[in-house]
Length: 183
Image (cartoon, rainbow, N blue to C red; front, side):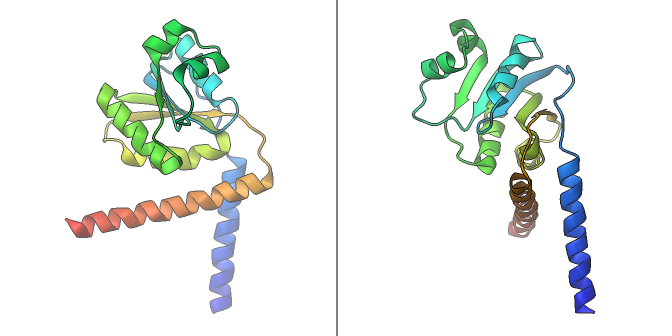
């Protein structure tokens, strides 16, 4: 009996991993949003965010998780962002150190700007967890468009991210239960 339960749990886990690995999200269609949110950490993310702003699909771009040592001028030079675009349309967030703190930083910025919609840009293998974390912190009614940067992750990256996603989902569920009992 216990062996069957263990086998069933393993099968659910294995099929879940397979579904995760085979259904990585793609770049979003040309949908307009108030803002584009870029989570640092992967190749192509910032370039994609800037492309969205340049195409007029978002008014402003927020880059979450920028190293505190990076100066805005250095950022602009590295990513070839004009001074005009930096001044009007790009905000750098220096507080986040991981995906969960990205979510808090993003939620605060969107609230301050009073934006109702955003395009979330991150790498395809990171999107499920990033979306879950960010969506969990936003007020109801805020719409998020998933805009994944296509990559070619190896099996170890997918395996690690799938496990992080599972832990994230469980911890979010636990915090909801804790919040309910505290009130």
